[in-house]
Length: 353
Image 1 (cartoon, rainbow, N blue to C red):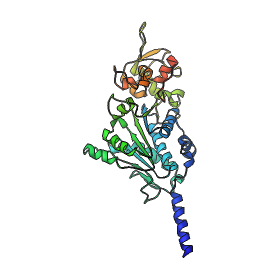
Image 2 (cartoon, rainbow, N blue to C red):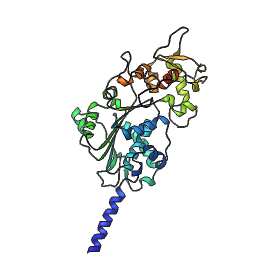
Image 3 (tube, rainbow, N blue to C red):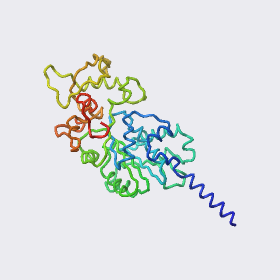
Image 4 (tube, rainbow, N blue to C red):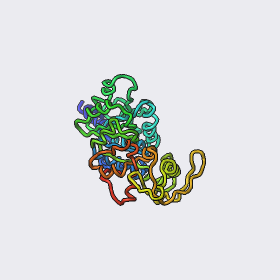
């Protein structure tokens, strides 16, 4: 009888041990987990996103297109789930549901396919957007939560309320198009314990809950810049599918212009980065542009700012006051700070610029 009880106790202890997060030594090293365990590589801009989630309750990742924000978000989810006991990760994206399934959970699925051994003991259902330590485990998991397109605000808030765990992570993609009540529900869950919120978005308008969080200092802002991406800097597609140099040069030609003789530069002007001088590209219609000269250029379209994930020099100078220039929309306030720093030699107090 005693031997049977002892064996049962050992079996229970072994089962509990098998469900524990297997990599606690990486709790303070998300980059180490992602490179050493997941065997991933990253563009330099996304590393501060990992560090910010580790260090700050709310991280706002303002990004240009195709700079790797969804890629890194999926790896952050895995780091949290595999390194913390009693951890829960909730992922969501602006409606429709396919945004969440095809983009963020597409990245999660890629990890699962690459690391089958790492998840051999987990219960995995990408169709249901759920990974847990075991089939009956309701305490430790990664899951996708859809945002209802219909219904009232109270129902949307309730969808994200009442979620509590010792280690709780929310990841929101396309955050600028997510209703404010979703953030209210999440905020109610972050009053205790080890809780984090990662919001990713492309700046489009000077309005909405993410804009208000950013301008009021409620989140730690990290910028992912197309101009700093390895594909653009080197001219080689080191990261397939990400932003490339030719697209960047084409957009400089389409969305900016050279200063006229005698025209004084202002806050919407920048120097062409040295690595893009004399580079060429063609229009979408196949007409070649002349090589980019080593000169100053002025932004003529807010799409340039939206596409390159920048803030303006004027906003940078007043970043400590957390305000955006009143003369333009948020996209136009997204001027390339890397270029501004090249021209002025000055540095920003906003992390990531």
